[in-house]
Length: 112
Image (cartoon, rainbow, N blue to C red; front, side, top):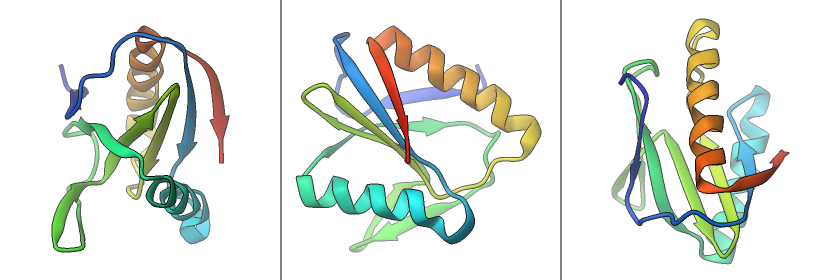
């Protein structure tokens, strides 16, 4: 499979709301969502592993981070990405993301 979600901490099936903060003009959505994640102390739960995204890694406080990450706690999953996929790959990644999230029990989606 060319799109794989790697869980760093197991995410059990439950009732979740997903909040997305993807890269865009000014990086407002992902920057504001990362502020909330850090402020609330959400832990990294999973990341996306795929050759469909441009190669990119972030270094935050001396630690490498994947560019497409999922954080969460108590019924809330927050999806953040600093990378811009091509339009061709965005559909494939988006479809797999929503399929994976729905398998986990996400019933509400909020886009920042």
